[in-house]
Image (cartoon, rainbow, N blue to C red):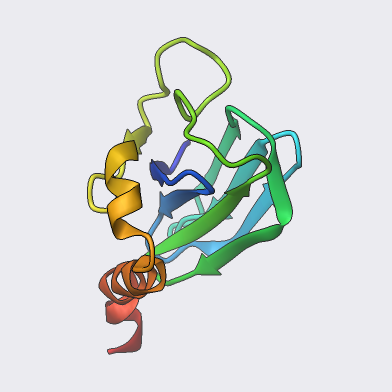
Amino acid sequence: RHPEIVWAQRSDKLFLTVELPDAVDPSVELQPDGRFVFRAAAADSAPYEASLELYGSVSVEESKVNVGSRHTLCIIHKQEQGWWKRLLKSEGKMPPYVKVDWNKWIDEDEEADSKGHGICLFLLFFIRDYRADFL
């Protein structure tokens, strides 16, 4: 079984959010060539796994993973700055469990307008996505 994954990008990073409430022992593997693997069990012990071949190379050292009770947020830094044409290397149709994260999405031309507000945007996303974990 596959968890739902939502994504958005900036010129320097990707936001991948794996939505699996109450995941047991979630793990994320990230390779420099862009291979991304998520594994966990659901609360009912059903195993979940998702494997993606990202469009380009990534910086494993700069990337961060934050595991919450409702989902796992991965901020993946691109090896080379620039907007990717798509999330995955393959040109075919996206897997049905991968969708655009419209809450985090901005267009390429809007990114320049938001420069300098990056930390504020990150904090807003973090507070919105994880506030229930702290209440």
